View (cartoon, one colour):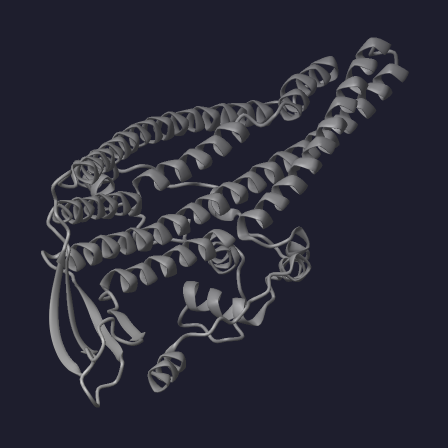
Length: 457
């Protein structure tokens, strides 16, 4: 017995405490940087596998997405869940350990001279209980755990796509804020020139003090708007850092490339075809994860059905009783008299029905998202086209105002009407262009196959 206990103790896994210190984890998060050598290797291997280790990284959407996949805690959380699902498969596939029963009784017989001469006055009865996994219990249990492991794998792909989506949304917000800030700065410069022009005209008696005051008020409003946009740019950079999983100071000195948003591609007929739609409804990562969850519920129902059959335990043993050797084989079985596991079976059927309903609801949600994203992007593209036409018309009229034959008040009037005023207004292409780029990202997210995380724009 001592030898057996020693063997069992040597094969056991010992606990290795892993302390979790808030101060240490916070310091680790604060020290994250885009200049980390291991991060550089990962980004280059992901985005430019043919480049050398010292190649320059262009921090565009693809590179920032790779950095987010390296740093973001959602990926680590999904990987931890997958590790738990793998361990559950090992647990489900294990055979139940036998149980050792040992009886030891020492004493005199109740009847004098009942114990034979030379026999030890004791009873020893070791027995081992073997639980039999009959009727496919272990197979059904393992199948359920394997399906849940598959769902956890697909959840990693879905988490990666969500991380990419957040990076793109934050980078798009930064691009839009920077673009509006640049336009507002140009507008402020033109407003300063207009105020200076009107002040000269007021000095010459050709403009009223009301006109000058009105334009000064407009200049003050533009200045305040520029300060608000400065804040919007700073907030957008913080959003980019958060989407990556790094502190804000990690982006200091990093030139973020946003030029890919200047002109999103137009939708083609193939992009909205039934084949693409069927692809989105059958092969997205969340669809595959939901299917794996439904398969797990099928296996759970099979396990519950098997549970209505009795459990069987074999107990071979040996006993020594006052000089008599006894060998025994006991069979222990549950008796399904009061219930036949109907409750567990009903629960499993209900959970399978719930898994099917969740799958159908997910497909219905995807259909709505596809329709909304497609229509919204097409309408946004039309608005962008109209805005470009308006901008071209304004530019044409501004060129006409430079006619060298114009003189006197006609020059001043046309200069103010066709040169200064259109430039002082917000560019008609600004808002539709930002909306168009945002809706392009939404459309691509709804259509794309999430089983492979595409990190390009």
